[in-house]
Length: 170
Length: 444
Image 1 (cartoon, chains in turn yellow, blue):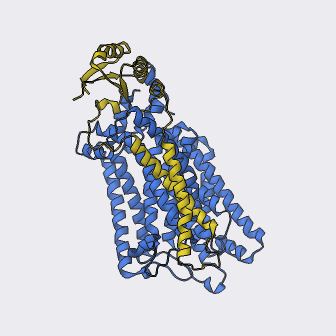
Image 2 (cartoon, each protein chain N blue to C red; image 1 turned 90 degrees about the vertical axis):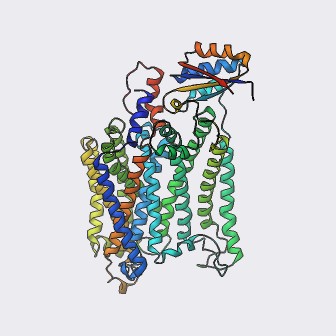
């Protein structure tokens, strides 16, 4: 049983939530997770914008797809050499089409896999969203902190205009 | 206008719709049933029941295939290309266009299977060695098709699903009937945390960037099914751009055809405004001009080539046994869309809807003319007597395809948010959310 406490502040506006999240991180009061109905740039800035590593998944997927698109047809024509249409066995131009399509396919699949992995989805078990309104119109700032920081975190949430504050054991 | 209002308004489309919806659904289901019965009849009896006759061995099944792949293209144009260009107006129409893309590709993918005669062997297309260890021929455009179409279907489904994920979560948290269990599973446990949004936005951008060249490649590959042959009327270097422009043209016409009734049935006039339709009409006009130019170039090249076979085919196309189809095609695709130069017509949804129907018919006829008239007039004059006319089975299967497509679309808009809630909140609600005192901004 953890002795850390989770405090949830619910905001009408993302800008207020961003101010609160930034302040808590600046003061090192605890770990912050935000919930919002839309991607919010103010929250991104408050939490420190980091480039998503998804691009690596997409790049690796694309390179793998491109390589597969050339290697696979070349392997098949060498496996059972059969000249069709008087063309060379390894005819690169038609294989470019296969390579291009597989590059896109694998890049997209790689990106999707990366997204699910990095976003920790699908969440089969685990707690539901702390509040249903986060997919509707409210923004949430969830702060996990030590019990002695609770008062300060609450004060910050109140000061930045949280319309509701809840507290529970993390 | 607040986020909550946008949420409520769009999720309202998931409630029981009016009688018009059910009448529409019954009609489309009936059409699908007719097509299914005709297909079963063909599968049981053999391809003789289709009107295929030497030398016309590609008939309206391949016409339908190309038509439906074409329809699929505007979805990606609207959702991916316009996203990359930051055209904010796409928000209201992108979801319907994306869904349309997926259903059109699914419909298109059925036709090669219906066409091959023994549909239970469709898996022979998949590249694996047969019992003699012989692989598929990767130099064949038909195999390229398999790769292009299956990639397009997979990427379109993922693109649609990614966009839907936060909206399904919004539905999960709002809907109280049995569907909330389905939404819970489909939302994959989406919470809307900063981490999730960060990766979501990155992936959405990559999908748009990947889908844009993909959309160009797919109809280029489909056009090479024809252009790689040596048949006059098919063997042409302009086919790829010509087909891509035509695909987007027909796709936008279909988006308009779907959105006009959808907007009315689900009372979405506030979100899908005349301004959106006008922009779609402008895109339709522009692509119509490109297609018209391509027609002119085709005829010019046939004349300028000095090849009597090319010239004969194009003369036959205008004045031969299929002249009526060609002239109907020109009327629908070249002349009727010129009306869209008038703002009054572009902004009148009734006339716009009628023009879109004309374009749908015209683009179907374009494929029919390219396929059937070229095949009917090859190098050998002895072949020229063959006249292809679709049999009732082919017509019924064609009707069934429309039935399937519209059924899937109707079921989708009834059960999933037909407009992207997330993007609508982002574009329309942001200013109001930042300043609740501000009034509802004009829909963009």
